[in-house]
Image 1 (cartoon, rainbow, N blue to C red):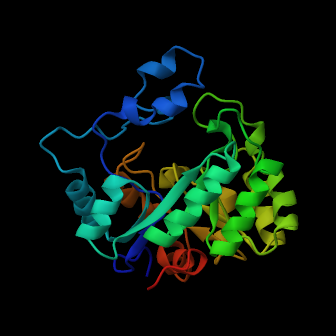
Image 2 (cartoon, one colour):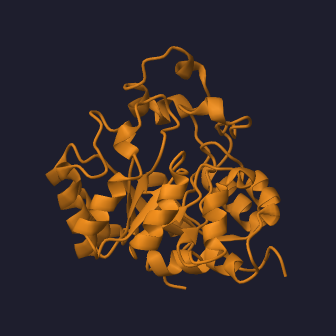
Image 3 (cartoon, one colour):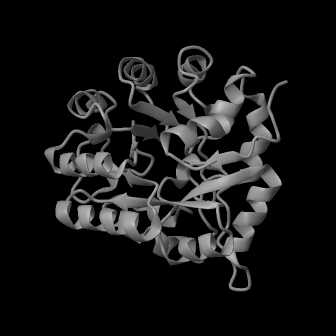
Length: 287
């Protein structure tokens, strides 16, 4: 069978071509100290060879993304909640789901935003970049615990960066071992690790074996660089724990991702779970 082309993939990290990437990433640049990062296509640009270009004024970013999704067989995409994504969801019902990026430094403000987003836009998930917060917030920090509890109340998962940060920030706050305490304290919480978990990918697998509510998505990695430990786990005891996520247009094109995916050595029965079924289950997405 091999790589299926008719599954209707769910992309757990997708967006729309940017008008001005410098403006989009301005909030992150405030915490970066080196001079080179300012000239990169995005804050972790040193890691990506072909970052998709910004959209010209005459181009409709929503239509571009929909065109790429249709070409590559992506049925649904998880996008950051904002005016553009709300318009996209109105224009293409059922194609887009909403996530909300949080900063736990404002605990009550974040919780209010989460509840409003759930009530008004049926929020699907929250996302959390510990290294990118100013000041940084550890995955297992007390500041985040009320947010984790709110995720349980709203029945939505939290997606958290795991491992060494791409932008030039310190990364200890994203040490994969920190998930161990969170999973112990919140057994009902669904946590999805994003952005690789390297160099602790073996530990990430060990913790997923241990904790039922801990998952992994492949965001920000071209398929040929997916960690071997994660693919081996998906092919064995982790078939229900590993999910596809891209990185378009932040650092990768959908074309490159889907050209490389057929070479990923997943077993036949794992592909539908990886591309679609696990996301529907973990994120409570209607089929």
